[in-house]
Image (cartoon, rainbow, N blue to C red; front, top):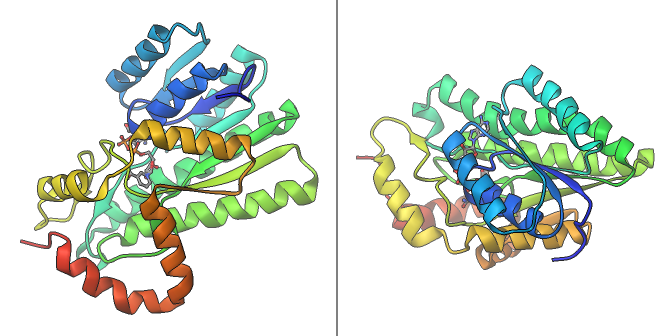
Length: 278
Ligand SMILES: NC(=O)c1ccc[n+]([C@@H]2O[C@H](COP(=O)([O-])OP(=O)(O)OC[C@H]3O[C@@H](n4cnc5c(N)ncnc54)[C@H](O)[C@@H]3O)[C@@H](O)[C@H]2O)c1
């Protein structure tokens, strides 16, 4: 893949799944990468795989919890100091949670918002001054197909991913209006074969293992490597929106055709094939 040589790219949640594949693909494409995660074992695997690829790409590895705002701000300055500039931030770190709003605890909903929304806000705000200063910046924020439509049991995740979309689409327009040299991309993956469902939590009464197995077998159709390629292709083309997978593309069309009426149709479809409460 061309277009990343000499760029400095930051990837959060780089210890697994899409983030890991992004970091490896960016390094392979000639970028210097700053990778972080709370999962240090996964992060070490990512670093090893970048080194094994023999590209000689410079890698900076840090433990970073995206919910820790002060640490994120310090980290941004540290990455700038280390590489001399920062061109791209991939706000990718995320978690999943399953449960109807009626029975979800406030703390469960807050946790999803903290990581999936505030983590993205922290990363965007921390790095934006450096991206503007680079003269060639790009913010890439990972939402989901669940940032395009809602489904039962995903209220917290839907809220966070819709919020990422709203925030990122506003930022895109603001950068253009201000004349800042920063492109902005919102990413909406469909089902990607990662650890997201295995790492997910659920309300009491839902079998998280059964849900993860269902996700792995029935919903996750795209590899993280393919997802990373689609994202980087979108970044090269300065796309405002990147949809990943035929599922995401089909659902995007269905939602646009149905409009708000999807809310009448989807529950009967999902309740027919999704595992439910026990
Ligand atoms: N897999 C899918 O089907 C899918 C679909 C749509 C959107 N997404 C989004 O893609 C992104 C990547 O997810 P993935 O599928 O690769 O999942 P994953 O679980 O394989 O990877 C997510 C990584 O984020 C890290 N992380 C979690 N909380 C963190 C925190 N507070 N600070 C720093 N790192 C943290 C995890 O340790 C993990 O390494 C997420 O934002 C997710 O919501 C995934």
